[in-house]
Length: 211
Image (cartoon, rainbow, N blue to C red; front, side):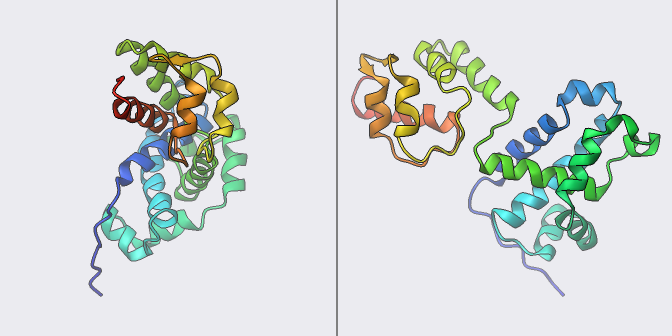
């Protein structure tokens, strides 16, 4: 059977990267993986993140995913059938893993971790490193209002569906002479993540001629 892989219209890698980074968070971060000598898990986590996102976000079939990633359909199936609770138990008891398990992350465990990471991303829980890079970028670009705004919204669950979720947190912040709470009132919702929030504010400022 010839599988015709349909083009994916949106940037799948942006979502996969967030899921992948969240999966690393769940495992305790890169430092923890290095301590356990399990950095070899990263390719399996990346592959599982792709599988879960392609299925859940883009409704791709097992055949399409296998063709897209160049892996077997059985591998795709094992990832999709993974038990998140079993995966969670495994990562909570990493000290008990065998030497072989530390060397190679089993497909069903990688799939379970990716499922949990995807769920948390959809609930608005962004990877720590993603938020850190947003803050670093704001500092590097010398955009003080962006840096202050990111500090104020720390802990906010994305996607943000209405301005009411932001207005109280950003109260007192002034962006180019305009109160931040007035700006967030004018933005289009939902807002998927902090980076999109900053982008929409910049577009609003440009539209107002005060960029």
